[in-house]
Image (cartoon, rainbow, N blue to C red; front, side, top):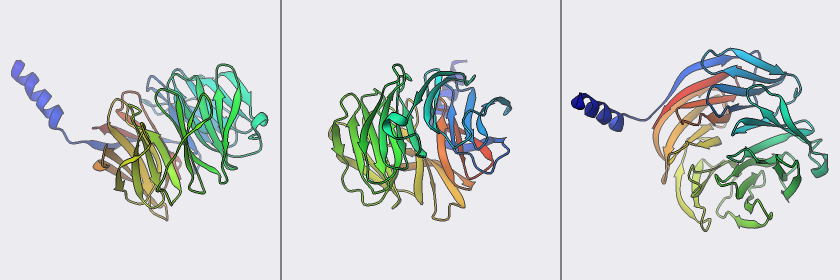
Length: 314
């Protein structure tokens, strides 16, 4: 008995890391804008051109369809809620039911006529950062409904990220500017240096000790969250479109593609150094990633009618 347990432990310790396609959810549309996963890891929310849809991850069946948002939405989920940013509002929704618990108009910060490009939600679901194609970067208090513009970039917002403790927010724009700001005061904590190309994706490490930036020159950079200095970098295949930290791990998942976007690669990378531990190649561009809280399942969407489901072992 003890020997068999030790053997199983040894196999788990030395088993290779994997990112493996395990299934797909078929939809009626050519493209899926964004996805989010529920806090229990059982449901996936997708923004399609006919509204929002909730699917059961196990059965792949559609559970809920809301036509309230018929334009592309930027989605995120934490705690027991999902947050949808699109049209003239940002809304906190119960997940998976999609009943709005709070709807906040965005006219106050001039974002009611612009296109949503990026969103990140705090770990406890109390706040969100959003960005639009006109360069506005705003903080939303999802409990009080207060909206505050943190910064106006010259270029459109490309990516945003919130630290695990909810105190810092990072944003990148199409003119290659990257700022880290204090959420409470709106004070600029850092301007990241050495970035000549557009940073297409930002994500904090799971423990909040570093910020990961992937730029259009194919380089991934890791910045120390203490002084925002660059501590490591690695060259990745193609342009990094989106990234997500693996919960409870010093790993990060990155989706990238070549210039044609005909094929994409989802890679599991270690920190520091961005060593490739495992990868999966898929057809079409990948725009959005979401991972379950147990770090074992990844969903991806983009230039395809399918939501792809991957198992992850690190």
